[in-house]
Length: 98
Image (cartoon, rainbow, N blue to C red; front, side, top):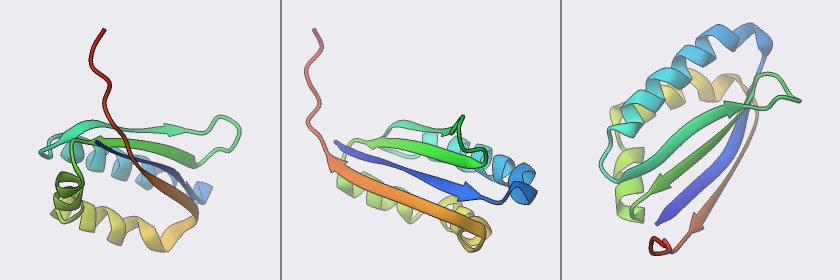
């Protein structure tokens, strides 16, 4: 299982379009094969900074997700206007239920 976590920051003037973009990429990404979890949350102490958390069944399925058109569209729409970003990838072992 692969976990990706981090944050992206944007200028307040871009807020409405950023929120629309996050909603679009979230809906599309949650439909991708291998998606276990995918969400964004705004940092309460730093407005317009959005933390993200993704969990994928495998590195191969994450790689396939990253090749999807909605990921390219998200990057094209947002990378040039980010004011900061972080990301870390973890290889995790799922624990059995119970």
